[in-house]
Each structure stands twice: as C-alpha cells, then as structure tokens.
Image 1 (tube, rainbow, N blue to C red):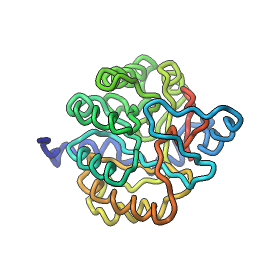
Image 2 (cartoon, one colour; image 1 turned 45 degrees about the vertical axis):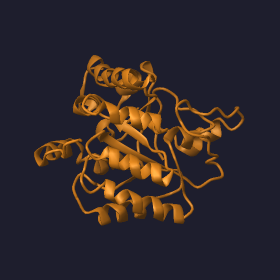
Image 3 (cartoon, one colour; image 1 turned 90 degrees about the vertical axis):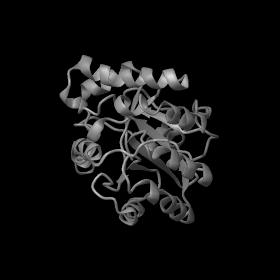
Length: 261
C-alpha cells in the first residue's frame, strides 16, 4: 500500500539527522537548564496523579524500571509494520513526527498511532535546525505540525524534539507559547548510518538505562526489524516500556521546559 522511500530520499533525510547523536551531549540545550525524569517526578511527588491525556494507563516509574521508546522523523512506509510490532508486544511509544512529506503523506498512519494509544509529538515541519532560525520561523516550523496533527487526531501535541537536539532560549520561548515541552534522549543507535538491524539492537541494549529515553528512526530500513529484539531483551532485563508523559508522571510536561535523562 505504501511505497518504500527511495535511497536518495533516505540519504537526504540522513544528512539532516546524522550529527544528532554526536552533538546532543555537548550542544543540546545550549546552556539551558534541563530536567530529568526523576526530577520531574520528584517535584510532583505530593500532587495527585493525573493520567496524561491520550496516554495509556499510568505506570509508577518511581518504582518500576521504566524506559521510553521514541521514534523520530516519521511516519514513513515502515511505520505500519512498527505499529503491528508494538501492538503485538503491548508496548506504547512516543512518535516525534515530521510534518512535510510525512504527516501530510501518511495521515492514516498518524490516526492509527494515536488511536492505538501512542503519544504523538512534534519534530517540526521540515527538520530545520531551530537554533538557526528567527523566532517567527521557529514558531512556524512547530505550529504547522501542531495544526496538522490536531486536524488528524483532534489533539495538538504537547511534546517536541528539536532537530539534532539543537535548542536555545528562542526555541524554548516558542515552545512555551505553543504549549510544547522539549524532549531529548539518552540512547541512540545512529540508525541513519546503518541498515544492520543486529548492530542497531546492540547499540540500544548497550546504552539502555532506567529512566532512559531511546531514540530511533522508523524511516530507515534497518530500524523496525531491530525493534522486537530490543523490546524482548529489555523486557527480560525487567524494564517497563512507557511513553514520555508516563515517564514524568505524576509530573506533567511543562511547556518550554527541556527534559533529558
């Protein structure tokens, strides 16, 4: 039903994403303060737990060994297969979606992911580096995807992931205005650079940690085949898979705030 993305298209997408893992530790936040999942939960420890809108039943990550599985830059031709795997494994993920040529190309996939309980989040309209844009351009990149997702699912995202993990005060301000929290990650497989599913699986398993956030891309050929093994092994290790809002609960994501493990 869905055509496989051309090799040249994947190469162009990879060029925009390829530096993400190398840059996140040194550049993400550009000096901004960040909040860890543990800190988010601690701040809300005395508040009444509220089930995040659109998310499955609450999990107590203060007690459970939680980890969040997230996917960037989709949806794409492989996403329906990924949704089949997640449904079979009874795992909910967080999808940071691109607008142009993704949300607007695969609307039924977006609707399906939302209907099956996955967290639908924002990864901008065209994957431009937000820290290099003017405030009105930042807002446009985020708001176009907000509106496109809302039109399909009835709910605008509350989370965003800045391309390449690049953010600054202007990005934080635009995110806050649009009701978006910024979410980074702790584990990535550099799956934009390999189609070796076994290697992708190994890289994620080597980096997995409690309260971690896994970053993968469901637009690349080697990624989705690696997911069943990742889920099975981490489940065997005692992990509980959650969405990002569940990872922060009973805290709720604060617009503009930068979250990273």
